[in-house]
Image 1 (cartoon, rainbow, N blue to C red):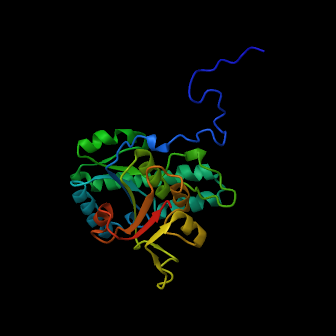
Image 2: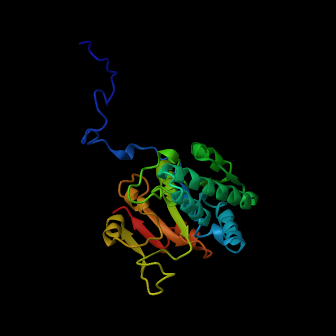
Length: 269
């Protein structure tokens, strides 16, 4: 039998699936592409769908903050995503197709938000442009990107739930992780993570600080953040906490950027 040619490398002969293949290799060797960046997710359902009354003051706040801090705005989808996914599921569309359809909505929101931020050097970028961020930030631009991760037709199949598990909260987290950002802040229309939906149960308790493991153990019926973010957080290298805030309240974003005790912090451990 002819001997197989192997190129000399640290992974020579590896299957890439051996359990202890990378044991002893430190993940801290990763380069942080944008270590001073604050990734701020603006929910479609939580903010953009409210229109002018919420978005005008919110964009003014983001624009003013961008003069002092490096910011990447990530947009969600909102009510139109729920509508298109409901139609898609009724028509029997596969999960990957639902992911493709829902991505179009958060892209539309990114275009609108970037235009609202144009007076502050707001500019819409695509997911493929993320490696241009260091240059854009040095040029004092305020980049806006849609939050749907580019899994598209390759979205993870969902046997018991057709809704794509990687949505815009997850996209914002993955962007922050790969860029080695300073923070990942998720803007919603409530003050943070509650034990129940506070719009349904006014007596629901606000959770100020919790680990991913503790949150998963609670097995809450409903959460204001995507469950996939909690799962990914446990194995993250650069982003070791995610903060949920009420972006309807002026000043909350700046407090979160400065590490003040606002909203809910979900920690990796």
